[in-house]
Length: 360
Image (cartoon, rainbow, N blue to C red):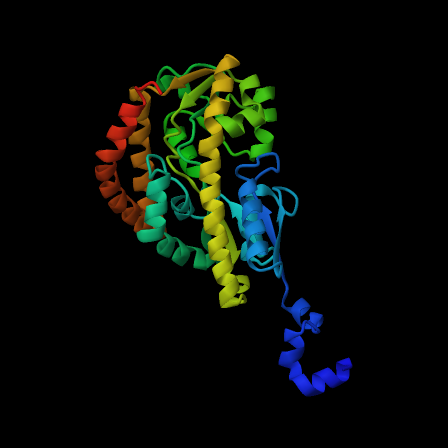
């Protein structure tokens, strides 16, 4: 039977079933671009977008493909929200607090000083009001969010000199990940600097900055910070469990079929779980290697933490007064956190504290 006869006798449904309508399938293919805020060298945080894109392609049978572009390739690392908002790209992969300058409420989608840890952040976003409140806010930027990873509690950064007291922050030029912690650090006397991940090493090496924080041992070792700053402090009290997000242009998402929307949601969950697991798996070895290379790993003192907490509370109160979006979301986050802290005081904290003293 020839092609014309087959169409006549079987109808279009039969032709598609027989695989003789490649043009119809080609029209259904979706091609998106994703702009990352991170350099390709970081297989952890940049790699989260690659895990996501690979999962989307696999689950769609190759009909939905997303190309991933490193920070600076399509647009500046901190320009990705503008790119999604105006539709230059369909989506991006970034850390919400980078855009604190647009509105303080952005930081609440990722991490605030003395905020939630990674598990608590996932709980608030998934079974609290977190995702709902953040997406209501993001609607004003023509986009919505999905979880794109978490680093777990971060380290407090690399310093050229020891931090023995709050006085040591006075005049210290430090690269920090977001404007919120920058405002807190200013109250402590530091001079915050906003520098993309791929440019931190050069700034630290040249002495343009005196200190820098990024994520933790695995990433920090890759970026070479231990070669130019000997003191490595912990914890990163401003990033107890920072969520990394996928932002998607609302119109682009609305244009997807129900099946493809479900694929995006499933792929984001996979990427998010993978990132945190990867950091937890890789950080221990990297930390041991850094210590073997003579890095001095030191805790922030109780006095430094208490002064930082006090300064953070002052900034939060100022944000309550200037951003109604911040005030609404922040109040919900802290209400949720109070119960989380209560619960973690018991089983989790006791178990972790005991295991930290045991030889395995």
